Length: 239
Ligand SMILES: [Zn+2]
Ligand SMILES: [Zn+2]
Image 1 (cartoon, rainbow, N blue to C red):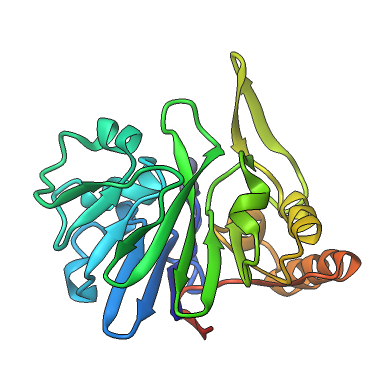
Image 2 (image 1 turned 30 degrees about the vertical axis):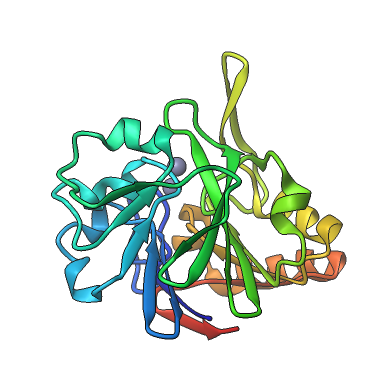
């Protein structure tokens, strides 16, 4: 399995050379190329990537609005996400059921509901191909079934909206927002995930001193026995 972090910018105004495009991951396996999420930055730029499919985590602007004029390939999303994007001119649409492994171009995607937004219900994906297995969740407060989601996962790819501060608010009984990198590292320590990559970078990372922040999160990882790094646009890796 090959991963290309084609975008690593969160829902912020700032953009830099390292974090120019809205958070999106290209997953390649054999001849297949599947993209997870297509935010507004990707509007009009998806065709040239020639994807076999696009899979969505939720309907927020930085994850789905790149499809507002349609898509060059089949699009997969949960029923709840399609309820929001129903008016988009996407012809080839597929419902992906939560907790049901679904093969898309030879790559298996399993959607796990996560807490993040009341209006835009969100999932993370357990993605498997060959012997490789990752969990991708760019926006979240927590994973409802964390142990099942992270079991035997090689790399957790998580939410960089905030490094140590809590971005969590109450909306009625529900919680909305983002959990800090620190908390996500602790989950990975508990579930035995050896490696973390942080994407969906917030202004702390994008406008801050990235080398210092990187040293800081590596130290947090060392305390928990978890390897961690920050993703940047066009970063590639092979599993
Ligand atoms: Zn986002
Ligand atoms: Zn979001």
